[in-house]
Amino acid sequence: MRGDGGPTVTPWEVEGEIDYMRLIKEFGTEPLTDDLVRRFELLAGESNFMIRRRVFFSHRDLDKVMEDLEGKRGFFLYTGRGPSGPMHIGHIIPFYFTRWLQDRFKANVYIEITDDEKFLEESRGLSYDDVQRWSYENILDIAAVGFDPDRTFIFKDTEFIGQIYPLVLKIARKVNFSWVRAVFGFTPQTNIGMIFYPAIQMVPTMFERRRCLIPAAIDQDPYWRIQRDIAEGMGYYKTAAIHSKFLVPLSGPAGKMSSSKPESMISLNEDRASIRRKIWQAYSGGQPTVELHRMYGGDPNVDVAFQWLNFFFEPDDKVMREIEEGYRSGSLLSGELKEMLIEKVTKFVEEHVARREEVKDLINHYLRDGELARLMWSKKFE
Image 1: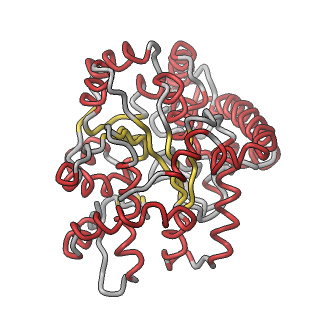
Image 2: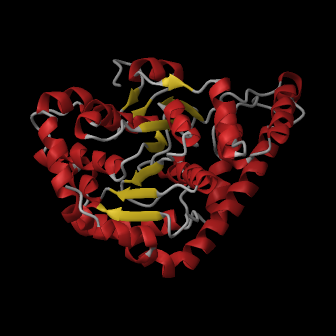
Image 3: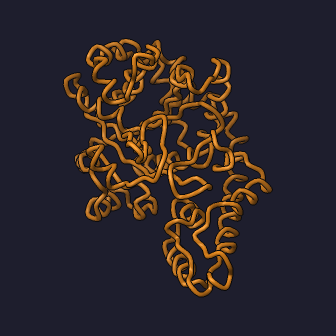
């Protein structure tokens, strides 16, 4: 979606203030309803605060995934990462939700590292060696999330392409240039690698002969629109998806966090001092002075620290209600709210860095040596 003077939401760019209900309408997805959430939580045997709070707010065919679960057919999960640089907090949060899904449903997880796309994306200006270096670093961060090594396969496109190329060709033959130009906005100046690439990103949705569920931010949805139009004609299920909102940047409540704007984000290896400095400077919904804040209170709808806590860093609903009430009433100051977030983000990053070191010896398990990895390398996708 590109709006003249309005927000832009594409797989490569998110800018402006996002109206999520408008996205649902324009992308043709469905909102997560209370009834759907209750049914899903019953099947999961547990509630997840990111669904309760509608951090994941939209879906395609989640009801069919639940029918598959009730019919004992199960499903599999697919997500990915474009290795264009270091990962930040906004990148890693959907992987934690994906791991929760794996834990609750004992599902296989396929994680595509799109090193080919990031090399082809000329605006990035990355060399092939740059992309390979970031691929390794990003894989370490993803592995640190704690996926089941025997139910998880992480693969780089440039390494695994030989296994999947026959299926890539079958997909590519069904998708013409006019179609991808309309969906992705390609122009005559777009290099031919980028034009071909969507066929590669669709392949993992067909790794198993049952339904795929993709947990991802909604900007990635255009790929799945095409897949859903061609999958059944190829003998596969239309993929299902559950879409997340974007974690707002530290600079304000519009757009999404970006590695190209270092002051707007916190990386997964940020040091304590930097975390404190960046969060302390984050956009606030408070009043200009303590006296005014005590009198009129703050606005949590635009306050970045509140939004981050609600998005991921404070899973307890009762605590979040108390924080919101305190902030709106003025009894909780902006500085106090930021201190809460600083403590939680610092703890999260330090624990992530420690786990990252621990999983270095497990990387080959995810890539080649684990049960699912060995199966995938021996499988023929024809």
